[in-house]
Length: 343
Image 1 (tube, rainbow, N blue to C red):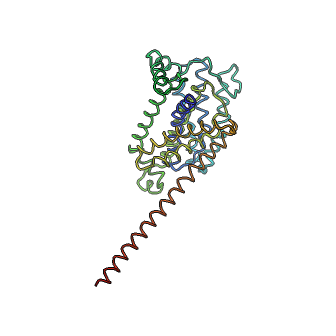
Image 2: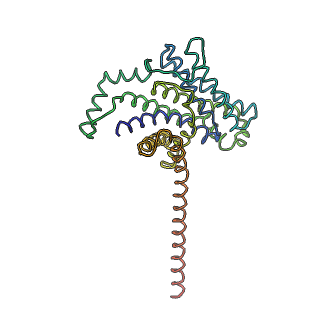
Image 3: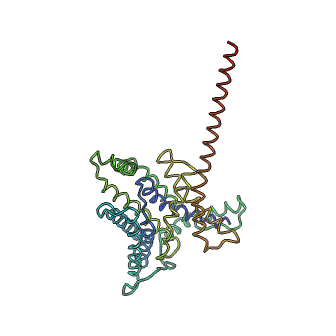
């Protein structure tokens, strides 16, 4: 059980990068970007293709980020220059990316044939490189001994290097996002999402800001896809289906639990929400009458609960506040009436 939850935390930290990208579009830009389902696979396909061809995994991951950025910018151009509805722009780009991703994965084969997946079982990845580094430092053995002796678990994971790597990367990206959203460009993007007409009155180019925001968002999504491909040791053309729902679930769960008072708190909530989502998902799959084929149903239920429960809690709090104010008014009236009687 501990090993399964540990793996869920690992994946949750990687998916948190994707959730940060979704947060930038849906919350900051107020743009319903469905490109995510396609750009996630674009990142995975680009990284896996280059690794299969023998390129350095770090370079492959960087190229995946660039590919995701281009995909996001194309969605932005469809909306801003093509005057296409935001939702439809994302759908069109998502559909186009499916074929593009198949072409990208085909580049790893002879004659560039169309391939639906790329295995990386015998390939060197970012995680295998860093796992060896952490293993040489003795971190894996030390952590596993601590878990067995202190917590009493007989089985312990041996991938502490992986979780340390993704945790460091995700924390760095979280702080970069915090910094970026407080810069002049970041504030302009936030203002564009809040009130596009107002920011135009200050002579700001909202079209460029939207394109940039979508590019950065999908670059993060593609980065997450590249890491997931290397973590899972394969890239598949269908691995991005439902990613937008997972990203939204992470954002909604995090915001409902931790709140959104500041940028720092909100991005932290998004990261935590992604980890919590994966843990809930892993626990749900351990229920006897649920199967892996129920993954989409579980995701839908988690999102529904994340949307409904905060509303129910807010309504109860509002009723409690109204009841408290009503009792305070009655108390003040009783005191006033008592004073009048004494007079």
